[in-house]
Image (tube, rainbow, N blue to C red; front, side, top):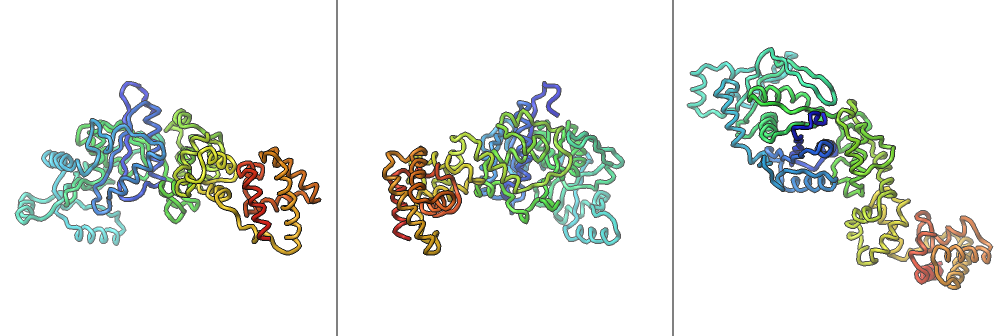
Length: 485
């Protein structure tokens, strides 16, 4: 499906509905479309399916666009940047949907349906009670001219329904699932235009994809059942349908469709929790079997090179938060400092770090804590080590232990004073001298220093912490701890 003839430019699209945050499953769809467009040097279109007027909002639209940008997904045409196939909001294309649907009515391929929601629901229940599959029974398809005229005269609201042809084979080759075939008899007449004048999903998608020259539709396999309806509409319009690729959905560890009960699902939530966009992209691609998620971490251009729709696994992808967390930690340790600092900057600003330290010291602290962080938010504890003097008194229990600790701290403070520079080598020399003079060493010695200098029992190595604190601050903290003991 990678544009085999290399003549027709590929045009893919991602069409979210601004009725909520960008879900991780939809983000995966957006990512696959983005990678495909980049791999084939094609165009990616962003289109907003905002016909659900009650639930759509400008706030969700902004959040979706921000989440996509944060993930590194770049579209060429869209509501925020325009393009030759606009407008890119469905609410701005209503006139086109209605006019094209009415044209099908004139050709006898669609018709007005006057059934109310209440009557449709009653018939649906009756079908279920008889063990029949629910669906429209075609009642208004067979209205006489007199009956239609009566409905019109009374001003009864109506929808426009597509007249599904009988006994037609609808087949397509899916780039992931292979050949798929439906019979039109399994499809009931479906709505094109609702009674409120808004287009249905299937109708708007076909009109938009056709008008925008979309050549490839990449979406979740929950849309496979929509594809035969859309192909029938393409036939009715006399237009060439795009090629399809339906990727598997993402499931939770319990095998059920991923939802909030499984933990974070919105991209914006992952961002707030301290995940890196590189880690999410790498993991989502790995879920499809395109790259091994436990293999070498790849740069964006390497992921594009590795991407192949036909290589995506047909089986459902299982989302494992622990695996993502592990990958995120790998990226924290391996990303260039400039990139890591860029993603940490909003957190550092919120923590008051920007005003406390210059960038050089901030980067030194980041380097100091890399091995101990799995999330960007984990750096809060690491920066707190350097922002405030610890309450060391509560870290030492028992008078006997306090006496030994006092001796260690007093002698180590003296050794530090005698050391010209308390860099890594200076610290090692001071520690060796203090261990010899105090006759204390090993865990007891170093744990005493750690408690006094950080107030913690675990964290970055003292060989990394002490040079950043500097001689003056180290001695000050030792004296502060001694005062508390």
